Length: 587
Image (cartoon, rainbow, N blue to C red; front, top):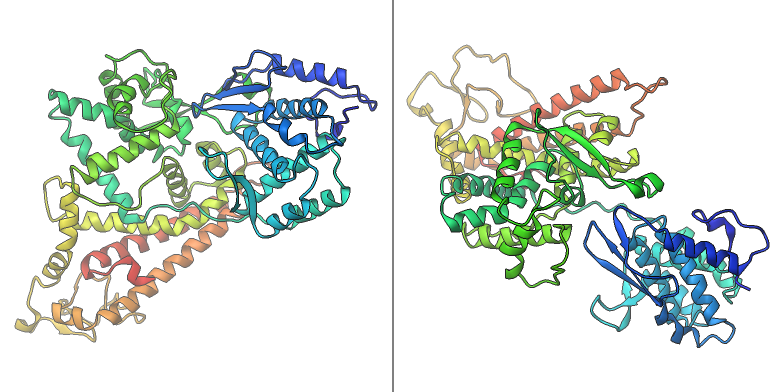
């Protein structure tokens, strides 16, 4: 008799204590036949099929649940009724499919198959399984294209999913002949595993800013040549990358949400954008309809979206903003990829491919620039959230704008604040550099101006030759052009009056005292880091008062701290520009 632990059947109706296999198979069949999810599709005809296929709208992938593949393995276990175990497996899978996505459910299925393979049909080798887990490894396919299975060192989260897959099924199907001793050991091992709090690795600030310069320059330089067919096609081809950059750098949406923006996303009367929110619990409501959000956007972005709609109007009609027909015609035919030509959606995977093409065809081949650390589709969402935090938005506002289901998930972004500061200092430094030219500068030009940074800075400092004028007052570091000394802005913490407009330094002194200057500017930089740590601490506080309203005092403190950070950030950027000091030298 098939026995199932009722506690784990969250999506199944309440069952009697005396389990009836026929009754529960009927209920599982009903779940299978009535399966409906706006974000995925059941492509299998009936419950009895040995292979189920479920497709996901978001990523365009189809997942095959091959129950038949378990049968040769289960034959090793003489204590198992194979047909019954397969039925239990089907019931277990359909329950998960009704509460999780096909991709997540397939990982459970795949993990269970790996363990079934390692233990020869859940019969033996449990000591080896436990040993693998203790050493931070799992047993799985060598790669997606191979049928060979190997041991792999993986992250703690992956080990947890690996263990959970097996423990979940063993609790679901209690007739699985396993020594309870091993179950207890696995549960104990699971309790010991701590999730790693590793942050997403973002590209260095300079690489992000070069990409920004290239995107903006590409868009501007292709506007005046729109009648050129090649230029027209190239602009159309890479316009999704432009929109991805412009939209997700200000609205922290997921790449999959960006890909599912509808064609009619713009308001006819206001500069607003309507887009889907996908990260909600897979309850009945969220399975039958997508949740949409509407937020204001800049007028320039509104115009870019209209321009893209016009550029792609000649292609096959599309339900979504990004035209898959245009992408297929202009990009897919030129890249090596497993392509589903029947689909109609520009997916996250295709967005990744197009970003890679932009790096190769535009940044490298056209602009002759090398960027080793490339942006990924999800990076801009992280950067946008950090930007919101650094602008003084409170937790509730960020949750609203970012579409977080759990407010606590935004804390993982706190450690990226220092990265964001370094990026913005570099951006401001570039602005100081480019103030020396009235013309729009190409990405290559920005790098050339960075090479000339020392000359520009020294020229500004040495407008007058202090050796030739008695009006300049010698200081311990540099000189002062203000004869009304003593200076009211003198700072005893520093040898140089770095923030005073009357202060200057000769090229000779700048080179000779460079180590001292770097040491003193490092003090400013470290104080800035302390302010950022304080800001992170503020985000760890509860932002609502007892009435559920935003705490006004905390809101004020966020804004005050942000203003102090802005001042230090701008000061450091100016010093980096004037003195030729790199951020990395201050750490």
